[in-house]
Length: 423
Image (tube, rainbow, N blue to C red; front, side):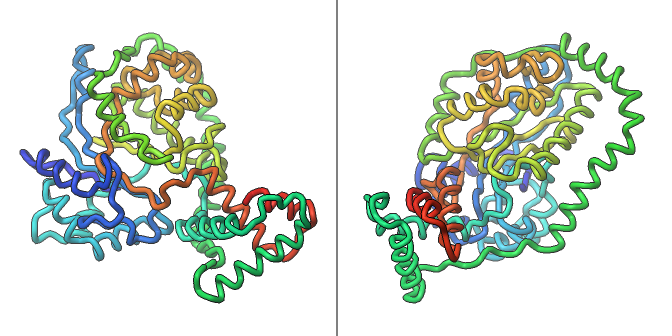
């Protein structure tokens, strides 16, 4: 994720330039001239968004100081492998386009080292979620093509025939396609040992540090509870209905595919208590996302491809960005109905959030106020790219099961029939 402040008077020109990257409102042309996303085979999703300071004015309504923050250009993506390698590839293969885009920002002069500037403006993720850790863009495309070929050949009445015979015919057909070069199926890439070791150290290290600090947590807990209840009762709640024109502007960027993007930003509640608490909560969310929820679901929500929380402006603001299946309304309903407590944990430290009780109760359970709040803090995603349009997470999971079944040397009759039904 790269974030850079816009230079004075450059916003209008940048908006026009970003629009040239799109095939539909907000949806990137994979072959656009500035940054042809489709040429980068490790890239799942990417987006450009302008980050204004509009909701910072909410602080002034309650006689609180409003920190000055600039308008930012935000460029972020989700990729396979090290993020820095992807950034280097962007700079090498699409440097001219990125220079044109970031020339609207402060500090990106014509003679500047582009990659060095991008790295200098990179922002770390406070918490990140990946729906299925280890599923690469290459295998998503290969598995989708395998499913397409098999479904075109499988008898519609497969249940009435010998499933083993049908499966053998299908496997032979796919092998012929591979020999002819019309289909490529590569083996699963081995996870780097260095990543596995770092992940293991993280999995053990965070709980170990918590255990060492346990006596301190026990001593502090009563004070934390008292402070939490005081803040929950006194923090301002500000969830007015969002401007209709702004909502319509957002809706014009949505539902062009089965998957949508969501970008939102807002100030953290003032004071050291909330600033410290939100950092601890996001640390725990990041840990759970990395070690518990990396196999198809975040709590009970199964429609999110990727999500991230990022601190900006010396932790005065938090940005949240996600890519999800379904409509905006169904996305919000999914959270309200299945994980409102999780929303409260993650977002109740945002200024104006619906009032909570004991951190997890209330808040997003006040559905209308919550929906007003999230729409007011949402910002348009000017450019959004998806490497596999038309495919939902349900499709990816099914295609992965098809591939796993294809790779098996033998199946029982029942397994073969179940596999055929996936097609």
